[in-house]
Image (tube, rainbow, N blue to C red; front, side, top):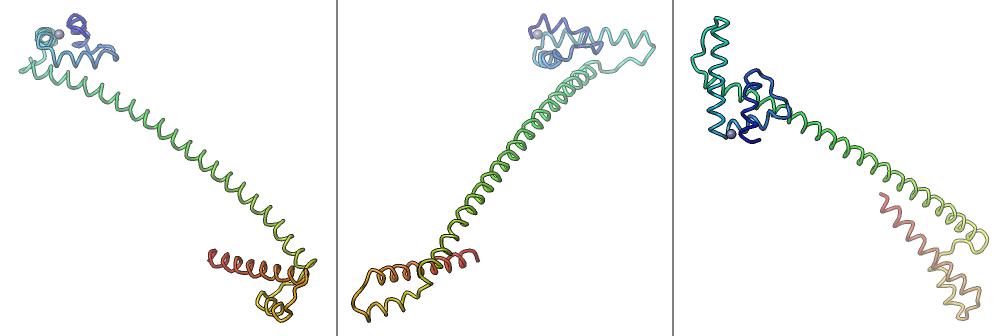
Length: 185
Ligand SMILES: [Zn+2]
């Protein structure tokens, strides 16, 4: 706002009619431009003084102080409006973040459900495999016992080799199962 424009708002200011979008610039200019401030003070004293005389009110003892109060009042009004704008902005940001968090959690839940589903599917085929394997092929074997038997025999048939392999696999599986139980606890 230049001096000419600022001075054009002197009368509206005295009447309390500076447009909202010009209030901030007007106050800023009047507080920082001694020339315009002096002009404003002259008009303010003249017009407010005449009004007070017309209305047979008590004449103000300090027009300069009254003017500062009026300027400060307008400045606070502008600041208050900006505060509302900022809090609205903060509210919008907060809402956006909340929506994002909810969306993210939903995604996590979906991924979790998908993983659980996959795990369950894999487990069922895995369990069937184990059960069928145990029933159709060899019963559960003790690795140490099977090794001892094999050592005694000295000669290994293909069947013996399969038996030893199965016993070792069983033992491994047992270790994994125990490990699983321990980690779950
Ligand atoms: Zn000026």
